[in-house]
Image (cartoon, rainbow, N blue to C red; front, top):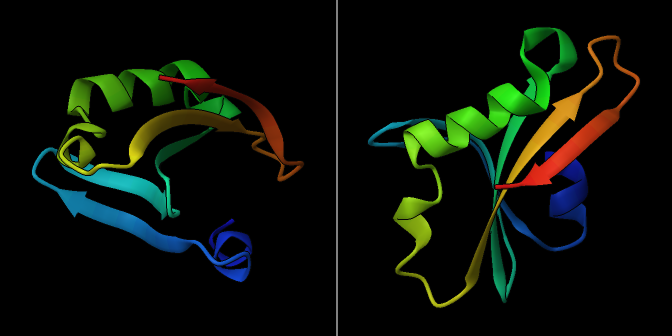
Length: 89
């Protein structure tokens, strides 16, 4: 995923450390900052990703930025077949 975002001109940080934990991926564009938490279906899926974003307050460090912050919980298939579901937190 990071390669795709880089290829279309986004700034990407993988495993970004913040005070409350490690964000799976942060993707920055001119107008948006996307905070992505990825979970496999067999590891709690979208519910676990949503809970982690909320519990660890992953979007908070970016709130002072003028860009819109979008936190996304993403569930991926454990067999490598791609995206199962996603949710804006």
